[in-house]
Image (cartoon, rainbow, N blue to C red; front, top):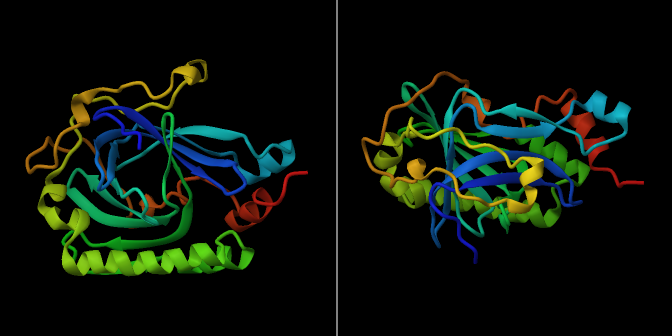
Length: 256
């Protein structure tokens, strides 16, 4: 298995089963081990999301995506190699805001990062791990009806739900050392990661600054920013898409 170097910029892509790229998100590698790939970003990290539904439909081009930047929270992401979920920690200037488990396909490593696909249902966990709640169950039921989440994927998600709840109960995975995760902060000396420029496509996978690649220990730097709602970690809700359900139904239909 190819591994990434600490501090390297990688690109997380949501890729539909049809091969269409839904989104791209620039991250920096904190650690890459047999247990998990750990990446991070801060406000200003570059992203690409689908163009608005109306514009994409009018242009007849579902490949058009708009560039944007990650806003308002620092993110630390823990993704085991074969897991149908990732554990995300979101930070504001006040510290760890919440944990956020995103249920998604296992990663497929690429030359400059990794591909997955958000399966809409999520678990939001309080910073002290004492309480949690499921999120977007209605959207998950909808994409199930549309066939976007297959029966096989649904079974994998159900199994992953049990795995995550067991991790919470046993305080395993990233919850083993929750205090260190709570204390983690982005190093302010390190710039926000950027997406590869088109001209540099052939040279993707280059090293980034090593200043984010620190072990998860208490006292690692202080936060730089800011505020957000509990739900802002959802990969879907940041896409800025008008009429999400109409978009999904149209965007995932077969190409002619």
